[in-house]
Length: 286
Ligand SMILES: Nc1ncnc2c1ncn2[C@@H]1O[C@H](COP(=O)(O)OP(=O)(O)OP(=O)(O)O)[C@@H](O)[C@H]1O
Image 1 (cartoon, rainbow, N blue to C red):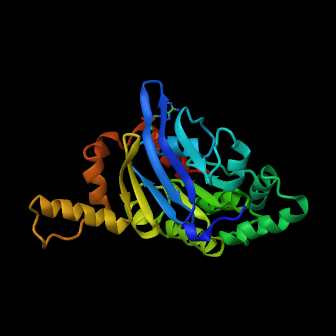
Image 2 (tube, rainbow, N blue to C red):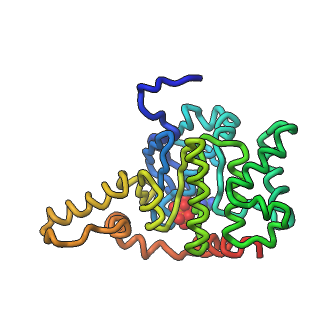
Image 3 (cartoon, helix red, strand yellow):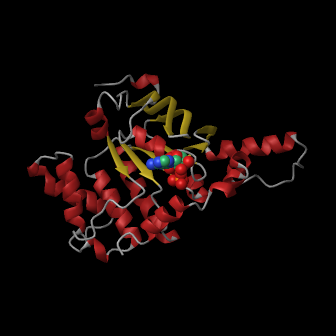
C-alpha cells in the first residue's frame, strides 16, 4: 500500500478513549494517544499510571474492552497477526533465555516471525550486529552483562525489521553507560530504517534526550503532551502566570512530571511490582 506523502506523517499508533480495568482498578481510563510514524514517543508516568497495560493492549497481548486502538490503521482485535508482524516488542520482563547463546535466542524469534529459512542466518547476524553483539553471539546469554542482555532482547525485537518498536522500560536497572549503549543502537537502526519507537521510561534525562514527544500519563490517561521543550516551557509559563520571577531557571522535565503527578509520585512508587520488575531486570541472567 502506498501512502500520500503530502499528507504528513502517518499515525503509527492511535488510541481513542482506551479503557482497561482489572477488577476495581481502572488501569487505563480513557486514553487518547497518537504516535506519529518515524518519531520516538515517550510514555512517562509514575508507577501504576497504566503505561504497561496500554502497551499490552497495543501489542495485542490484552484485549481492547473499551475504546479503539489502531496500529498503522490495523485493529489489534480483528487483525492480530497483521499487527504483530508490524511491531517489535521488548517487554519489561526477561525475554532472553540464559541457557541459549545470543544467536540461538535471536534465531528463536526469527522462527516465530516466519523469516524464510534461507534468509534466517543473515537476518539474525544483521540484528546481532545492529546491537553490537556480533562478537558475543555464540556465548551463552548467562555470561552477558545486564546491558548486553537488554541489547540481545533488542536484537530479538529487531530481527523481524519492525515498523514500530515498542520498549517497556528498556534501560531499567542498567548503569548510565549501558543505558547510553542501548539508545545508541536504537538510534543507529532508526537512522537506517526510519522505524517508529514507543517507549516507556522512568528516567527523565533519557526521555528529555531521546524522545521527540512525550505523553505524561497519570491515572490511566495522558495529562500532558508535547516535546520536552514544550512541556518545560509550559510549566515555566504557568509558574510565571502564578507570580514566579522571570529569573527562575527553566523547569526540568522532572519538575513537569512532579507538577502533573504531584504527591502520587511518592505514594505510588516503590510498590512490590516495581521492585520486582527492577530486580528482575537487574539480575536478569543471574
Ligand atoms: N495483572 C494485574 N492484575 C491486577 N491489577 C493490575 C495488573 N496489572 C496491572 N494492574 C494494576 O493496574 C494499574 C496500572 O498498572 P500498569 O502496570 O499498567 O502501570 P505502569 O504505569 O506500567 O506502572 P509501572 O511503571 O510500575 O510499570 C496499577 O494499579 C496496577 O496495580
